[in-house]
Image 1 (spheres, helix red, strand yellow):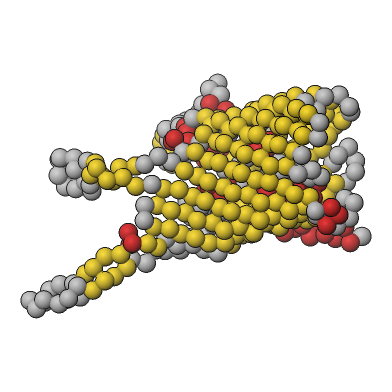
Image 2 (cartoon, rainbow, N blue to C red):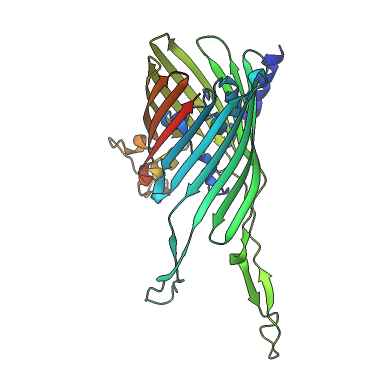
Length: 372
């Protein structure tokens, strides 16, 4: 009875936000915390109810409770616009007490040249390079723990430190992930939910915000310049609620087919419905595919690169009728393959994931996992 109460409470808490009818686009920072990793990236990011490997440190920390061997994984992602995303994570079972996990996330990019400010009132372009360069990067370090509370119910928690850096400015904060996972025992049917990136607002600080000013610029008397600092506006972290279902309609020694569905509610975008499938043969070869659909159709069309047009009947801007063009549907389509090799007590897993990002082109992820 207590288990049923936990599940009911979980469903209420995690699905209430899904009734929001609008999106607050661009209202949160630290967007790198939303970039998916591991097998889940190839399954349309429908992974919260699966989370049965070391990548649970990202998707749902309660999934760590199902990891019985020590695992360490490194995932590399060639993200958009020459940006690189790397995720290093490890899981350490602690016997019947639970499973501990650690993770490090890094988002890096090449040097960028500082340009002069262009004066829009002149016809000459003045936004030329200065010969000075700067870097931008994001990092997060997390400590996770997952434990089985019954033979079917697991819960988990992640605490992480987050930092963003642009040139000589940094913004730091702390965040928490919480997840719960329930296995019904019927055909591997699993229910799960997670709340990710719940934490403090963060704001930039650093010497790039420092300057000096004359306290009385209109006065003919010279006054000593005063050191001053711009105060940056704090912004929230990208909080997201995930609710997922997964089950195995086929599960035997030779074949396993897993289907998954996630409902996601972020605090800075439209809700998404994520679908994923994974087929495993002899626990050695795995084929994966998935699709992430936004609940706002116009937003989906915009992400494919379609130009808005004027609807003369309704007198509003809308997006073109794509007709037979499948570009709209290809956006957020994912696919991947995995190979698992076992030598003695050591297991090697190599996973590849592809995601079509529409107007932002495609991304490619590769991961290596060592279990021992």
